[in-house]
Length: 108
Length: 113
Image 1: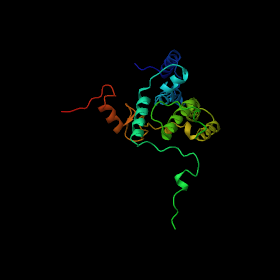
Image 2 (image 1 turned 45 degrees about the vertical axis):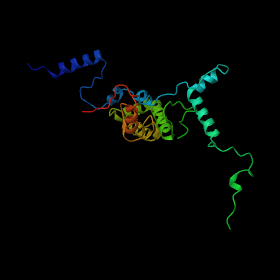
Image 3 (image 1 turned 30 degrees about the vertical axis):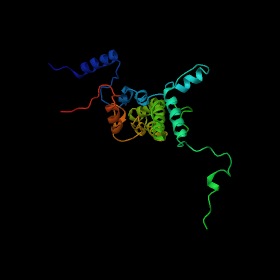
Image 4 (image 1 turned 135 degrees about the vertical axis):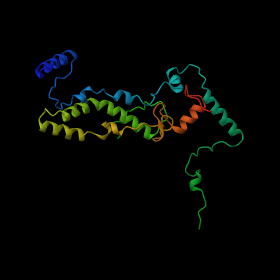
């Protein structure tokens, strides 16, 4: 039993009204596939982990509060040990004359 | 393009200029995505006048390159490497190996048979 084309088109029209899609029986390119796409910006922008509160932030928030930063203490201890063995970083030069850069013997 | 970069760094991972740049591109793309999609719709809609579509085409092609999704590349979160990055772990292959062996990645175990 063949159904006339006009009946099918009517059905499509009603269908589109119900499901909120675009009525386009001639199959023209209306670019609706672009509108149907989801936005991928939020997913892409969430790729890198965001900054969270660090130990320094905590100390800045509560200046008087006594805190213990394990890594920082370890670092300071390591520096102390290196200095006691005479392996520490050199002292900061105060003047230009002290600086070794200008004190080296010039080659002739 | 420093004009897009945030005034304060909001990254919590390994930071270098490549990572910052990619992060900036992602945020700029997120901002401009609706505009781009609207222009793309106009371009693809054959029922609109040809002149409008050509204008939209021009406008889309003249948007800043940072608003383009193809500029975005998945980089390693631990070392900003651009190649050999696992999408699931967001890490390059060597960082993945180190972290997996150290037990930092849940559910990953070295296979042996």
